[in-house]
Image 1: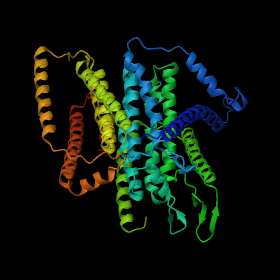
Image 2: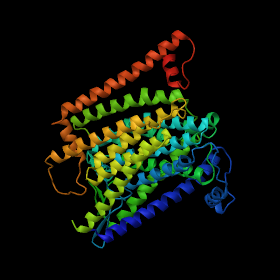
Image 3: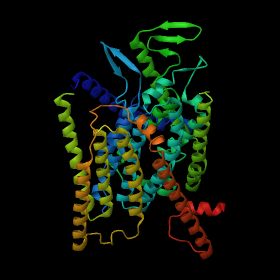
Image 4: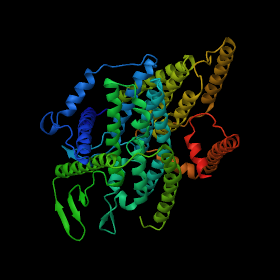
Length: 359
Length: 193
């Protein structure tokens, strides 16, 4: 039997998450401009509404009103499809990210996660690799050498860093023994020597660094934003795009950043975990139990997740306005000669530590 | 399991089947080779959908990861970087059309009879049963030899690729003038040699 109430709950949840991601994307563009301005001792956009808060609305109207230009020699069909193919996977990946544990409501257990797939993290990798396809196709269909080079760079960068990212995640899978993101988040609440929570960053410090660097490369952000390096490639793969088609690429990039931040938080910082917080309240070893209502616990967990994701979003912006860009051969060398060997080393070390029962 | 779920399953099966067959036809019939490669995207995606419908979520996701994220991107790479890809007449001539039809019919018949002869083990429908663990266990126990053979094959392919790049660098050194364009990684290797 199809349980209609459950279907309705998860449908509403996915719509809410979808809208929230779009809103976050909008305000992230504002945050990027404000933070970059702050770092460069400027003011940034502060005229539209209080503190410039309505700037994203103005930007959106501007994008819609702009003329939508398709180059004469472009491959029309693929040129139109490419932005769509970029933004859909960017939105889809968030489906498996847990933003809270369980919520008990009227005798019903609601997972605070849209889809708790058995293949969790693999799903993220698979959908993310579909997203790169839109960039390549867009770069090719524009019929512009800068776009094509941008698309090719993007693909080669993505393929090489996907390997190191996978190797880093294998360490996490070995420690927590599950592909489900919710399980991974849950096991990070267990305690080490009965005091320290087993967060990913503590059990996998090397893996965390590899994952962080790879994620920056995967999202095409500075210092690895070579696919759209404006000093070399004009605008990269989206050189020819304008109006809402460009906006889709732009939104796709920011949506990917949100998913990436959520993944870093889930894999290495306990996801929705708050140290010592369980379904009945805080359980602190050698101290006692502070009882709490279950709905309050759920809200605190969701808040903890949001704060962690927010911090990593800020981290993305922070890095962008701090570091210079890599050269392309440096980028490839870093991926293949440093990160992949380190990833394999991390797996060996993790295996040894698990055999010694340290983690 | 009610009739309701079976209906939903059937609807999704026909959607994916139509997607696979339709896009596969496009792959063969389109004249523009990049569009063919792009149509292949939907074929592979549909196959992944069928796998997931069968309860093989791990295989389905791996299908997307390997075929769309790896193989297809390499195909598109190859197609895009091939010089004068438009001037090549890829439209099938009558001879190849006949040969293609014959081989398609033969392959279909073979697969059809193979499917007919296998005594399929029906274990019942288990929605959301985890498959990752059992697959990993089987690969590391019963099917260790084929698994390791596949790894050896991949290592060989990697060594072969590395060898091809290195010999090209030697030729470039001897000849002195640059080879085909777009070889920044090769330049990087040469500097360190």
